[in-house]
Image 1 (cartoon, helix red, strand yellow):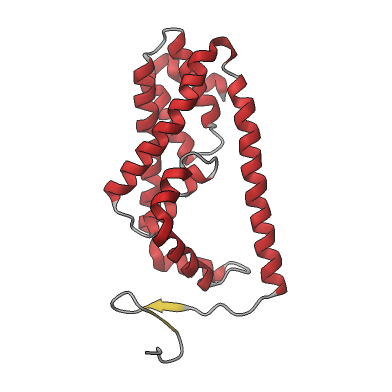
Image 2 (tube, one colour):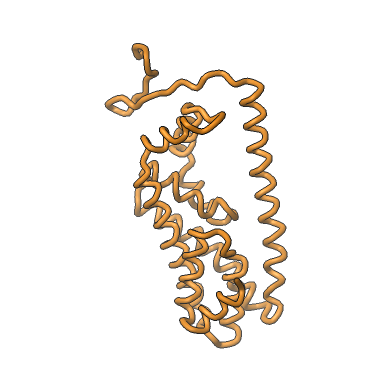
Length: 219
């Protein structure tokens, strides 16, 4: 992977770094902790301009996120609810709570999510499902990505031949995030098995109100 990214940058320069980062959003096996410091190292050796590396990697992050936003927008709420209803242990009410949370904290989630491995890609999908304002989504994505990318590109630039040290630190951070996510999933499954209950399916009514199926809506 490192060799392929290095060759891409050798061939295209800073735009190659941007393409690699865009693909990283769509294909998580391409790690940003390798692409970004390697781009910084390439800038330190004169193979590309540092400012161009920052600009193109941020543009790549934004384009990749926009593609996933489009996936969420095409999927839409109704398909999301239908798919969720078919998953074991998942209730439609879980989706509704997630929607309510995203309505309150969506802007912060998109911005800070750009600095969290795994979630930096996934957060674009619910933003598309909920049809977050596209200018707001792009602005938050570009700003959050610029902060993340700048930190790692500059680290690679300053470390020079030792740029690979960055990947070690980020690997620890990524593993901590994955462990926390796995723990959250385990807790969710445990609670759902202990207290299964029944998740009422709710349909949106005209005017944005939601009511339970199979019964009159309470005033």
